Image (cartoon, rainbow, N blue to C red; front, top):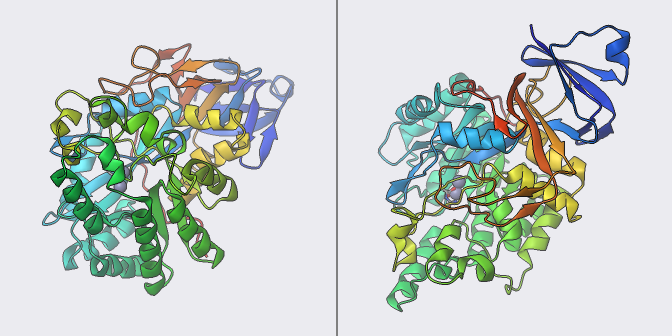
Length: 474
Ligand code: URP
Ligand code: ZN
Ligand code: ZN
């Protein structure tokens, strides 16, 4: 079994920083060694990585991606191959992608289709949530089968996108009741899609068709309302674990904070775009440029009554927001976002970010929003525990998979289509963003994927991870 020794670095976990060396044997971490201990006990490593002056952190876990998702009249532009190579470049060693079942489709076939797409193609490890776009007797039964047999223990439902993925309150309640029996987590896209569709039609009728109206037609109040409704339904279903995805709004955060204060099994994630971007600076860019930033929930205005960015950062510090994911759902401008020229409602919803989450949130550390430990916790450790992969994933400890990011705090990264960019897109959602730090070396199960600015991974290295239940339950 090959031995790798990562020497002289600072190992960071959610609870602190440790000046230890990491010994890897084969695919797992075999020991954390005091400085000099490797020499003292005569470890002979096949490869030594000198991490002096660098942070050694668990590989990032992005629990919300959409590779190859058919959506908005097209399909997300990253395949599992291209998207997981980009993930590796960004220090992400596990993704949890969303398999799809739509109304009238079979859940097992939806999951099998996702295994076909991902199997043999991934550069990093992967797992699946299952989107349930059609809640009925059969899909409810299938949910339990997936939990018991397939290692798929979380299901995304939508209060948005009527006629596409939408579930009504009765369907949501039934899915939650099923989850309360089988232990699954319900993930919720919480926006009031019925009310939003009315507003969208009114804007279009007035000739207000530019990308910025995507945000104006989806007010934060309607994200708050839906979040609150989802929480109430989860309470009615018996305090079933509820995880609000891609939170963008202060009103939604308030609802989650209150539920958590009441001891409910309610959790939430946000994404970098909701921490950094604004309607004015991004969606309202001249011409059709704003289409690049059309995603749902939308990028919010800096003139809203609530200060969404600072509230979300605070929510992350307070653990009202437990996880940062990307909601990676990339579309090119050409032939994809362009479908919405002249009608913002036809712009495919989604942005690309799987490569940049570790970088962008590290910049939040530099700016004083989060501690280094909380960076690791929200991007690596909590995602693993939230979705039943800990301690195989999300921690640097003996027995864990050797998924490791060596991060250089003295390096610099410029994100952009002609700078750092490996996603299958014709633009970067993060063009021009500068990071005071850099991905140095990335290992997945003891295999070096990125080193010296070179990708060394291979298609098919990534394997499917069967997950257990949420590890945070009361
Ligand atoms: O705009 C988004 N978020 N696209 C991906 C689908 C979803 O709602 O997560
Ligand atoms: Zn969503
Ligand atoms: Zn999503």
